[in-house]
Amino acid sequence: MRQEHTTRRPCRARPGFVQTLAIASVWMTAPVVLSGCVSAPVAQAQAPTEVAAERFPAERTVPGTGTFGGEELAYTAAFEWFDIAGTADLPGARLASVSYVADKLAGEAERPVLFAFNGGPISPSLYLHMGALGPMRVSAPDDLSAPAEDFRLVGNPGMPLDVADVVFFDPASTGFSRVEEGGDPRAYYSVEADAAQFVSFVKAWLKRHDRTGSPVFILGESYGTMRAAEAAGQLAEAGMAPAGVHLMGQAVNIIEYAQRQQNIISFVVSMPTLAAMGWVQDKVDRKGRDFDTFVADAKAFGETGYLLALFQGNELPAEQASKIAESLEEYTGIPAAWYLDNRLRITKEQYRVELLKDEGKVLGRSDGRYVGTDPGRDPSGVLESVYVSSWADYMDQTFGIEVDDTYALNAPVNGLDDWGWGASSPFGHFDYSARLKKAFDANPDFRLVVGNGYQDTMTTVGAADYLVKQSDWPADRVKLAYYPGGHMAYSVDSSAEAFGNDVRDWITGSGDWATPPGE
Image 1: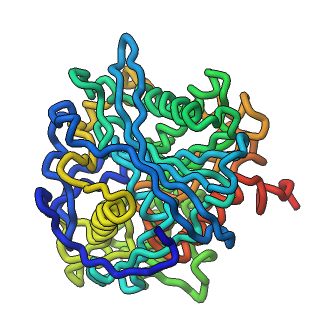
Image 2: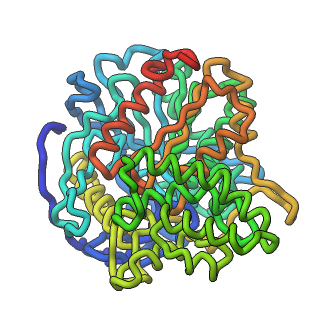
């Protein structure tokens, strides 16, 4: 398997597959029909225990070569099964995983291991695998209206294999992973139990590969950031605190971007995202400012005049409300009159529909750079469809494994009420950040990255900034990283490169991490 080649792959249907897809890289998104061609298993909504075990692929390893971080490396790619023992409350599980171990560095017992996974809840890790952290990645055309056929599968120099071995985790009920026969998959349908399964997997992988002394780094995306936070706390309590956690598209302070009318903070933290989308669509008043300055000004306005106005609510004088509405029009492109008619509030979902309404167009949900004409569809859904199709091709050509109707893109989680989020009453608080504090306290070298795409409406740069500002984490061990693009910002080639460099610096403690605060 050579990593250097570049191919064009048509998006094609496969026997036993249908043209639908759940956006499984994001949290709590219902299945939707996407534009373009997509391969998604018919069986994804079946109970995982109904699939015959003998239909699943056997373990296998293959050699590969590629250039990562400027270094040419030979590596071993492995498709493996890990049997996780059950407990009194949780059934055992058989977990499928793909990992990459650099050959010349395989004997280094203390070489870092990066464990990566996506969100949901719950989904397999194919999106990070094909988008950012595998030896091959999907490269999206600059033309955002291009069909799936124009996407390319290319070598991925951003993969951090030069500094860490990379392991992808698929929780039971996703991908090929399943609970043991007769077990109830729903036993794992909670943040705590889901993270416990991952912790068991980490221990099993390290033991099998004689890597129990290796520093463990965890990278989770979307809902996976909740798993990463909880798992970091569990590992710390077990005496094996991780070396670092990366929250990409963080959902750790999910209440701040969920947007209900009375949660004024959620509207404030959405300002940078609305400004970034309005900028891309050329609907805002730039006043000669570049992108970074414009978004920074929108953020500053949100945290000062806008926040105060929302706090005053019905007591805000009409003259001041008009001035705030004019500023909102400047930064978002939505007319001031609209804001005055809607209590100075616009949700991210409303913004997607309103900004280009006069043109009969709607913005993407997972990536607000994309534009479509059907409000019922996410025009940025083409990204997920191509990742899924490319994943099937990659597994076939690399391992000889068919991604067929036994492969689950998402677990059959039945809405919000089917998942245990951790709060037991209306007064409960989902304080997932406290679990990260456990890791900070247990490991003085623990490093945390919080990353996000500017045009992501589901998890926002403002909420990420607010998370860090309101935490009690050591400031010198936390970094924020923002990228052009949406929920999977690494779909943008330049963002994928920046993301790879940031992951590499995070693991090695180099780059900005090597610079003391204030210097």
